[in-house]
Image (cartoon, rainbow, N blue to C red):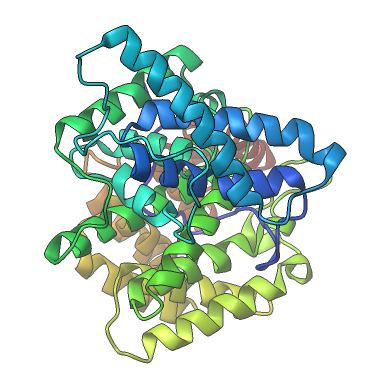
Length: 429
């Protein structure tokens, strides 16, 4: 069973902070940044994903061993491509000898072995690789796993931990994903025409889900997965560089930054969750807030609002309020109403309930909550019970609120969230 990735952030998202755009600070960071570029080059040249991935990993390992002693070469990507291409040639020769006339290609385009010492060129195939991993023939969970492995540079073991499965299971899942894309007839090229717009929507959704799982890990001991949020932001920046005029791409990047800005105040000294209303706002990442607001301002000036822009606007209202008490809940309520009209999403509807309660009082929120209780997509979710508990607490019904908090904790699969909810219940005794 893979991890449940929500399609809309909670009202109080709490993510991570890689600092605003700077160069890689360590060799490990540099290798992670270059890994998808090297892999993309090999897949484009040779047409075999699995073998290209093995060759890339061997080149990265060699660099990790040599560069700390000899120094980073002047052209690190070219160095990696050269080493990986030589290893790729060896691997392909071995496979061709073993399989003889059997087709060795793992993708549908021709298998041609370029000379190992051929120039690498200036192409960065990372974006092509990202679009390939988000091929519509794949289920969402497979798209996420393949993206994290091929483009994000995470190991299979790291992805398995995020999905709460064994490494062997995740290896099989990623292998099946590659096979599915191969069988679909996909080629290593950017989709054109209408297909580009359709695939872009999938790419943005996958990045959005990766970010959400990173800042609010749905199960296990960890409150957050900083590797996932950092990769989501990095990859979204990469898409934005190629599509700076796309308002929803800009909106998604702004949403991530504005949400991620709160990470420094998210936990206390013991590492326990601190809700947004109780966070020390002076600890928020001001650089991310300024960048996110600037991106959002540019996007909304075109008057073509989409779901990511609206959610970014909600995040900006939270970030720009000097205190929790001065939050403009009336405007947040209106934005959620616009979002509800765009999407039949029960999590959006639940967040709208919170905004209504904060703007108009708990009675108004509970009226809408009663309607939402009939929706089986959300009524059993722990967050539904947590919101119900919050509204009951606002109304002064402590006993009922305590019971609802305890029920939310019982249903949650996140241990940090369980601790927080149980603490809320205990506070009402």
